[in-house]
Length: 140
Figure (cartoon, rainbow, N blue to C red):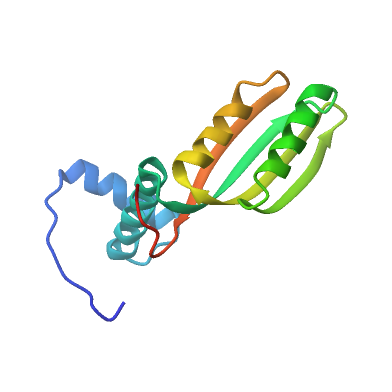
C-alpha cells in the first residue's frame, strides 16, 4: 500500500454514525481500513459476476440419505477437479452434512456449479462466497 491516495466522501450524518458503530464493533481502527475492505469485497463480487478468475467457497448443507445427491456431488467434484482446491465434510447430526469446497475458476462457471446444486433434492442450503479475485485474470 505504498501508493495511497486520499479522497473525500460526503455522507449523511446518520448513515456515517451507523457505519462508525458497525466498524468499531468489528474492530476496525479507522474508516479507511473499513472502506478498503468494502471496496475489495465489492470488486471481488463483481469479478465473480463478470466471469473473471476468482477463489471462492461453496458451502452446502444437505441430507446424505438422498443417494442421488451424494452421487451428483461426487460427479461434480470429479468433473471439476481442476477447480476444486480442497473440500471439508462435517457431519452436523444424523440427518445433515456440511460440506465446504474451496474453488478456483471463472466466476460464471463457479456460479453455474452452485446453481446446479442449489435446486437439487436434499440440498438444504447452498452458498457461493467469493473470497478473492485472482490477479492477472482476464475477464471474458
